[in-house]
Length: 218
View (cartoon, rainbow, N blue to C red):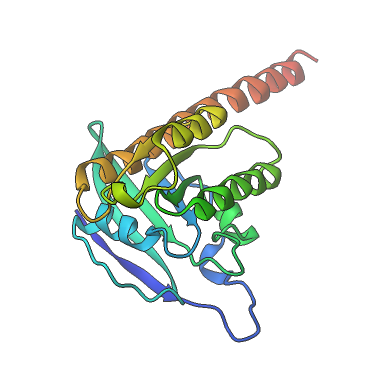
């Protein structure tokens, strides 16, 4: 197993997006690029680091973005993860064009103790869908901070219904207490991404295979 932050990145005073490290290269079945999207303070960094190191860290620099590389086994196959812990600027939940283009799939995170973060996430999902032109996109919805039940503002049913409307997995987690479910959430998205790639490859094989046969026959 290998793990580590590739770089710590921020934005300059002019607010320009960070593009050089997000150059889009097609990933293989054994590679998966995941962007973690959500409002400021929902726990994106805590979830990312919890998945990668199995440790919980409560305080993070919210002015920086981090991209981590991590290798592990999922369903008996070696997988190389790149996890982008995004920074939310002007309530964009990290869903900037270069991020959306780079990722194979998205972890959509809200806090169960903050209804605003849940409503913002629904708008973020629409932005993702518009950018990807309505294509089926590998997504998992995470409701974080489930350990703070006495402060809850978003019910489990609301989160589940939102995920069902997207046709994607939904998991409530506590980054501070629940490494098993955090890991399963990322693995679940990995499975969705691998399945999406296989279906896409099968489609293109059929299309270009038929095209090749047509050329030969003509």
